Structure formats: C-alpha cells, structure tokens
Length: 376
Image 1: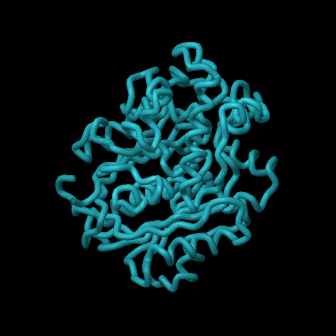
Image 2: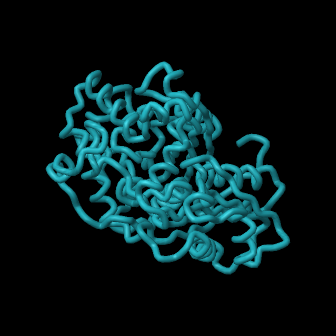
C-alpha cells in the first residue's frame, strides 16, 4: 500500500477450539506463546467480544500483558462484536505499517462455555437493537428470514443449503484444531432440531472456546498483508434496504481489493463468516466471488470444496471449526496463513497464493475483509 511500510505475518499460534477446561486468559496465553516463539514484540493487541459477561474478566489486555511479561510496552483490547479478532489484526497491521512499531502480537479469543446456553444466547443477542430484541428478534431468526428470501428469489432448496454444513464438517475432520471432527450428511442436517425455520441445528455455529494469534512484522515473513477493508451498516435491520446483501460487506470488500490492488478473480482460497449456513452464500456474493444469486449453484457444483475452483472455509468454518466469537476472525487469518505457506495438511489447497478472510461484527453491521498474499 502506497506510502506505508510493507508488513507480513511472520508466525501464528492457535489453540484447539471446542469446550475447554482452561479459562480465557490461559487460552490467550497458549496461542500467544506459540505465535511468539520466544520473541519479544513492540505492542500487544487483544480481540475479545465480551469477556466481562462470558467469564467475568475486565482489563483483559493488561492481564495478558502481565502473564506474558510484556510490560512496560503498550497493550490494548479491541472490541468489534464477533469481528473483534479481525479488528485487532487490522489495528495491529496499521500500527506496523505506520512505522510506529516494528512488530506486534495480535491475539483474539473467547471463553463461552462457562455460562449455560440460554445465558450465552442472551449475551450474543445483545448486539441487536433493544427495539428489535423486544419484538423477539434473534440472530437465528434474522438468518432464517434471509434464508427464506434467498430461496424464494434464487431457487435454492433446503437440501441445497444443507450442502454447506456437510462441506464444512468434512473440512473440519482434516483440521486437528477444529471443534468438530465428525462427517455429517444432508439427511443429518434435515433431521436436526429446528432452530429458526428453515434453519436447523446443523446450520448453526456452536458455542465454543478458543484463541488464535499472529505476529505482524515489518521485517519480512512468509505471508504479506496485502490489504484490508472495513465497512459499517445501520444497527437496526429494519432500516436496511435488503436482507440479501450488506452494505458493510460491499464497502469492506471494495476497500480491501483497492488497497491490495487485486480483483475477486485473484482469490484462491477464502474464509467466509457463516455462523449460519445461509451467510456463506450471501457474504461470498458480497465479496464479488460469485454473481448475485449464483453462489449456491457454484457450491452445488463443487466449486467451493477443497478440490474446487475456489475453496471456501477450508478450516471447517464457524460451523465446524468452531466460533468463539471474538476469536473467529484471527482463526480465519491463521487458516489462510497455513494455506499460503503450504502447511494446511490434508486440507491444503493446491497452488494457493492469495487468500481472503471475511468477518462479520454484530449482525453484519461492522464487517472486515483481509487479503493475504504468499511470498514467492
């Protein structure tokens, strides 16, 4: 990016996602120490959505800095709802690009299973406006409405939609750090518990614990931070013009491709936010990876599978890799790093040179897109 220092992801670290016995601070330390590999960094950026309510922890960046022996260098927490990890990564990258720091650690995570499921769902629903919550609106309910509208306008069937969790569960079986390591079938999806018609349990990401980290440096590395973008949308869904596209996505993608000097056709592998299965379709179209209303056809034809033209959610995605909300954006970064360095194991995408991550904050109202490029 013109006028700024080139920056790179030099190393990563990540815990296993799932129901963990460790507390949030322990998970953040584990991921951080793996990424640091004993090195010191100039600053620490921490992404968490709501550690206060999920586990009663405040001032998390200072706590982590103390545990890592980081003082007296700077440490700060970034909160951007479920895009907190991506926001922390963006803030860290900008800090290095500016020349203020030579290297920083970005780590993000969440500990969600310490509260019961109803409590966790209540905390997550707080990202909606009070008025819409008072009418009974939930994240799952909104995505159910999106799914119905998308099906009505495009011809997507309920069976077609089930192919997304089937694909992502398969990918997760090849990811040793994923929450789930179980193959599922279309029939399994269609027989699972109804959550918000037409979405069923297997269309929804689980409540997870976990953390992921990366060191960003101006001194080189195997993966370049090529570009990123950030966009917002109205909090109230009722004020938006459509359910089938998000302005926050469009702006974030526009900015990311512009700063990277790339086009959607340059992307070889992508991690797309799909806390609910229908979002993989809508969000990938907003990224420009597929024509409007056509992503489901590409998915059905196998184009988004590991061996397809544009593999999506090779990690297993939010659905099967797991979704510790504040940490999911950094988990996406880690997956693309592995893909671009040829270290993704059995889920490796052949010839992957450019990768994209897309992460939603709130209900698609504060979204971030990051583009990474492997060094030749």
